[in-house]
Length: 252
Length: 287
Image 1 (spheres, one colour):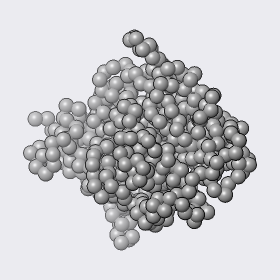
Image 2 (cartoon, helix red, strand yellow):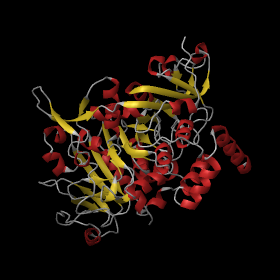
Image 3 (spheres, chains in turn purple, green):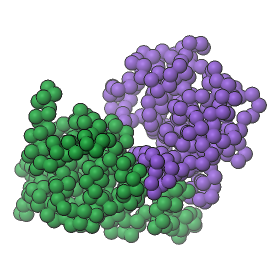
Image 4 (tube, chains in turn purple, green):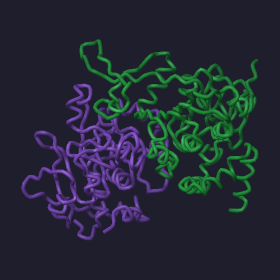
């Protein structure tokens, strides 16, 4: 156990945990912290994961942020990502701009759809991801603007929408975990409303509540997110992110 | 032997205002930018643009050539948000048909197969069905009875794609890591136009690269344009990578009307040769 882990490193490990037990599937991390996390998961407790180089190759081994994989083990052009996605053998971690208590998320537009106050990327693959295979989320700045009562444009669907849309939508729908800079959340409640699973070291439950724009389910005393092991810290610091790009995304 | 060689101006001459045009590549990667620039110089307007969007969408939106944008995202990759796209959306200046990336692929494939739609789970429960009011669902006629989204065919009047090599008859080759969806665009279109870095004799296509790189076949293609550096400033691996410095200049200029007027004056008011010369001069200064 290591007491000197940074918040970013705690978040990396919490994100890595999302892929524990997934076996031989494609891990698709979107964004820096999830990318470090997926490489860490494969280097340690999830060795069978497949990882892309972010372009068109599947890489074997463990490689640093900003570098190319040491060994190419497969070809994964964009069109083949959809093949894997439809097979269900994929678990993506995306970065929602807004997320609500049911896990609905938005990466398309803030404000009115016809004339958004902020136009974002577009829905990308979020609608398809969420009805085809497990999906997790990473939110680097937990606040009432990201954890909202209602998202403006449902891009990736939550449990209420999946249930309402019928069996075809809910059959393969699974939101595994939401990791923010403050804590870890899941939907392991009877009505699939977002639950606080753990708070990161140094964060209080009240801080999380205040930063959340809806009522979180909290079962008694929330545990503390686990610290990285010495081996995990070594991998993060010397192999996967030696230039410490992670602390720019999550300070402290 | 049909020689399909033509110029950018010839291609634009075959397009009409109001057409639905698909543009290949992906984000800021292997976009047929010399053809896009030729459209910017034309009087074409009211286009419906189908794209995995990058600066192609940004430039055509900025020039007010687009009535409707059919897209899954618009991004410059290394710069996440496309400034002209943002401005157009935030001004309510363009009609949109926003689709999941997989739905866009499905729509092109349905058109390529001459089917009215293809079924998918993708989109179920999402606001794509709320905002795309013409999207319909379809019930499986089999025992499962699942209700699925019917992605309508995205039939294109014309497709524009940029490849690394082609012969004069329209056999075209990608040499980078990803074919993107270029063959689907060509097959979904009534007329497909391929620009390429170099036109070479047919026999040379497979002299240095495996036959699997010949993703585009001549039956799909109506016109071939030789356009060296035609994808600039997007990437065209392995011939060249994205011009990140130029893309930064583009994105910065795009956020300010005065700077954008200067950018237009410096690069976009010229013909393709003038554009390439201005880019080369810029690189020379930078070096």
